[in-house]
Length: 72
Image (tube, rainbow, N blue to C red):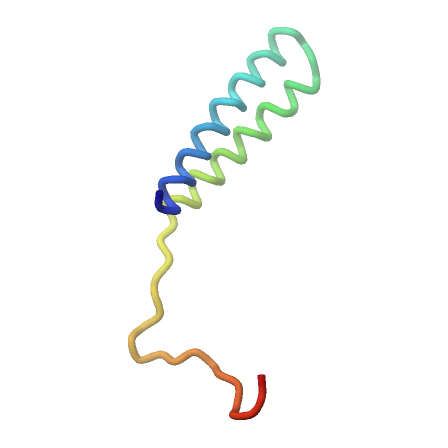
């Protein structure tokens, strides 16, 4: 599975768990679930946003810096 697809899957899973934890926290008035829910949802949004970012490859003529001969 490629990186973007796996990040999307993680994003949706965290969104779902966050929503369910938030619902449980509001229904039972337990502070732990109420705080944990939005945190997990935010993490899901971060994963989804990261999956949409496209990294540009290096240009064809650009060389990466290399150490001089004899140095590691």
